[in-house]
Length: 323
Length: 310
Image 1 (cartoon, each protein chain N blue to C red):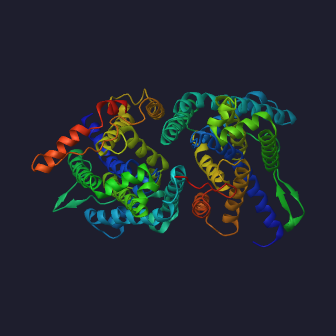
Image 2 (spheres, one colour; image 1 turned 90 degrees about the vertical axis):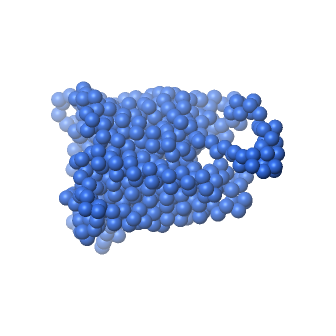
Image 3 (tube, rainbow over the protein chains, first blue to last red; image 1 turned 60 degrees about the vertical axis):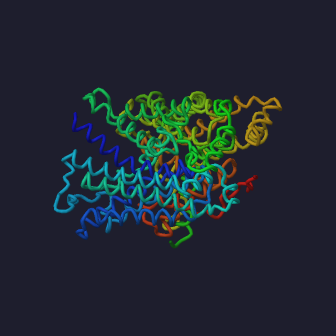
């Protein structure tokens, strides 16, 4: 059972990477993309092919996986990101399906529906990371999630994050304020894709085999649900969402009732949770993290004055409460 | 690709496939026209329709030998399944979408994905994962028109599909264009608030829209089930492609959905048969067409171009 819990945590980590990528696209830039499965697949296959056919080290394939996913993200993002809302969702959904379709049929490279097996175990500095040693593997995944979390958090707090939020709130207004809408949209799409690519690499070296059946449209939907369940525009919430959804998915096995609950029941439960959540708490469990501004502190005369002014001009508790 | 008859053969096959896509696309387009959201559960309603049709048909035909009764039973089963799915569609709308009318655009979409999960997995749980076969209610030997190499073969199934989809589409078009209720539907899709002020009960109109869309999906589901198998996820891919058809024709536009469906069916058939695209990439054709259409004519072939107002 401990082993099983570790498995859930590992999958949480892998999906967290995808979810925080999705959060950049959907939570920050406000674009509804359903393509994470496609980038996940690209990352997985890049690692699998480079490891098996070219004998690369797993860690050397990671940047390639991230870059290639991001590149595909940019290539398909440039034309499609002009589309709005639902249209973008459908176009990206189509792209995800096309990627899977190509992988499924490009036999000479991907071995078609059979997939690629016997991927060598990753090693670094003479230490072989054995996916069967779940604790060790979990540690590696946690490091990855932490690194990406910190990078993305910093990015989101930067000029770019503010630009993305402006685009989400009102694209036309953002454009007229001099924000290069296309550039930032494509950029966020590329970041999201790169995250999913890295997640794909980790998935490959965990399962040591890849088959196209893993990368269905369902994966994209799951990732989107993680982001929405946790709360959009909040990286911690995305990770929480990933954990909760993995927990629900594996709950019957975890408590040893997998015979009593057929696999479908958890999916039914999952669907019901989604519906109920949308009706009663559409902002997710944690909600959006609100950007708050703090004055630099009382160091200078000006800033002390500004702080007093801010206290006086505070939008009032009544306004805040009414929200 | 040589003779004219071969061309007609592919044309006929494409038209049949397209007819089914069009029937299902109508449900998407009607719902989108009024509520502006993608009903992801539509494909699963199609699956439910196919199952209900299968059970009613098997019950009615019992152990009687193949004969005219079978065809009659099939039609009865289709009516049952359409009514049941119509009710199911209304029920789903009440439970999962109605509370979300005023919510953000993402909320109903995700709720629809939830409904889709519930429907397809309940079906897999209750009916099992093995696929079932809906028997042809008639002798499905192809009828060859013409002779030898110049012949075009038509299966009775194709005739049924073409007739059924033509009848459904004409009835729907007349209903929407000529009746009072149809007028209410058009008004609601144009502007829900104003139509409410004019005394239109928009909740009824929305319920009716879901009922009609779901009934058409059930009909499409049974027609597909004759040629393919009935299983819990049968609706997913067909549903997605039908949605593509609706977008290609111009979403929210009923004639557009018909045109888009037929076009998509023809493109898929000709893409594989004439352009030599490998069979495996068949699904990619639909999505490729979708992306191209969205890029060059984002409002679809028959859609109106709406400039965004600031």
